[in-house]
Length: 122
Image (cartoon, rainbow, N blue to C red):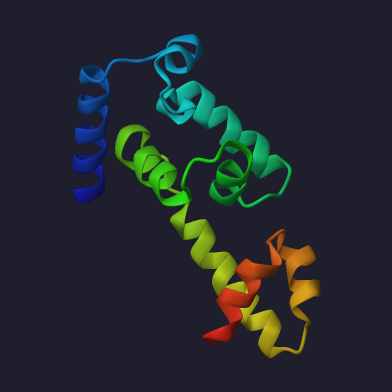
């Protein structure tokens, strides 16, 4: 029930928010992730390439990972946190089985620093 209500609020908010075109965003110097179509396209593309989505968007475009993740969830209902939580627990399991951080990186499609952060806390 709570999820349905929050999704309804997100949908209602979408109707009130101006939808900018890519050209408008560029002209005003606003982040491209304000455009839902652009953001969903990037998420899909990076997901298909097996890359960490928010980190890769930060690397490619310079947008802070937390800002993009927060905006995507609030305005468009895009929430990939569960996917990150799954990768974090999988990385810990693999590390405990004796796999090297390098092997975990290649297996899960994560950066070395990310794997290091995940496993150092055990």
